[in-house]
Picture (cartoon, rainbow, N blue to C red):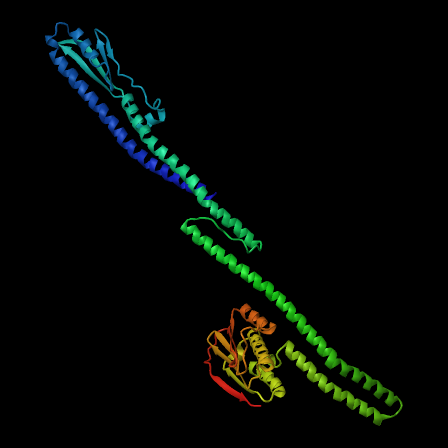
Length: 452
């Protein structure tokens, strides 16, 4: 059932309940009032007849006087008077015209007042002239109560009808924005995040509209970020594949070719019985394997931090620093890792390694620093990663590379934040805050300086 008809049902229910309570009260009062009125009319009539009977001895013709007495009740609203004796006379009550139609039988039964009969014997001078029969007739009184009851229903019925009509129209008008909101939600659910709700609304619905529009804007932004991230990931993936393919082609492929040539030569020399010369080719194969191993290890390090799973976070980062120290020995490196960072989990640990790896690479390649400091500090449910250098920094017109942008997306996907700070000539800083599980151990920072 719609909200509109629920409200109308509530109003109708309240009206029916109020009418039931009012009707019960009116029924008690009406029934008591009709009985009282009938009783009073009967007592007054009997008193009138008794007074008239006391004056009959002085009347010339008592029978005629009795007929006149009965006739005097003609037009009474509540009594039917009959004279039963030597002469017959009857006075019937006036039947009033109903204002709202005839009284229903159920209403008469509800009032529950039945006619009452009273008899007054007439004796004058020892002579019995007959009996005057008094019978109450509650019809007119019940009709009066019915008219009052029906009249009292007209005003509530009109007001209720107007109220129901106003509720139907007003709620229908008020629910139109909710219908628009439901349609807009369906559109957002279908992925159309540019949907917005406009128009003039009540303050309550205006706040709802503002909340919906903010939600839709955020979803549109998140959708755009996801699309951009997917494009970035595809770009980075292609770049990484290209670099791996280039390394395999430029670095590994020549050694494999040399190994194949040396192996063929050694086999040929061994068949000819020239073992001494074959030994030289075997040594050449061994010499070619070693640089291939280093190259493959370097490639694996780009795919996954070496030592993270085997030795922990500190060892993995020290391997990264050692990699660059061998190539740029003139730079000083500092590493600070707080206690408790070894149990961060593979996902958080890998993300930290990627942040440090990309930051070290950017600093060494582009900043020309003399010092690079790496700090990893765990505090309760967060771990803070900072990589700073004292290089030349980044100019305002420069744009972040794909590597840092990809790291930022990775950090935000984990519910963390990544910020950059740079001033030309004063160095560059990368700061990441990542969520992690709480740990009971206190964070004790140990600082290790790695000198070239």
